[in-house]
Image (cartoon, rainbow, N blue to C red):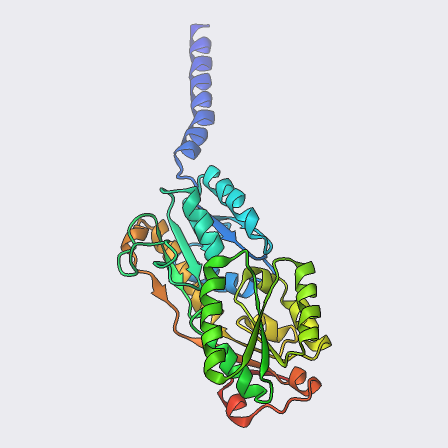
Length: 331
């Protein structure tokens, strides 16, 4: 009888250990790191960028759903939503935040001084107060800056080359994104003066205001339109492209998505290079590097995309020198 009881105790002890051991082992497993992705636009607008971002992460050894999670927060072009979205990621205690766009970066910076942040912006990050210097950012931020604000004057030059007879030009800006609007407007206005063009500045911060801006544009009888690099306008690329064709206004935007949606031209940073660099920095931080030690990088490649079908619809003959410089011609 004693032997039976002893055997039962042994089995109970062994069985309890067998049940407890997997639970303890699982508890000791390191938690899967979580990346917070804070975007001013939408997942659809960022599809091409996200592919490059994830490819860079994969090259460093991180695959979403396998050994890393990604929490996405999208403002859908409404910058006033960004502070709350950034706060959600901080509350989630993500390991690192990828902040896409200047407004996202500023919101993330305001939300945390401890969680590493990798930004992608179109302005000088020192001038807008994101980092102390490009070479030694310090603090919890680093990232990538594009040439999109710097190429603002070039947008006007390319548009002038496409339609040299147009001397009355409009520029569409989003006033709720002042960190970009101010710098972009300044450069384009200087270029307009140099080219002897009259420039009208139109404001829009919503879908309804975009429609209203085009009604004003028609009244002004402008011969061309330059569109500011803004996440609202990225989200509304299809709407913008359709309006430019409907009102027969030759237009240029920085995002390839605009030309692909039927806009006349796009001229801006290569989105794949841009977000590959962002993904690389996020991966390096997950592996233990400090953001303050990683110098801010600048993309150097820009793309000129021309929609030949739209040019024909607008009655424009694309100058051979311009088409020869194009990285892509959409037929």
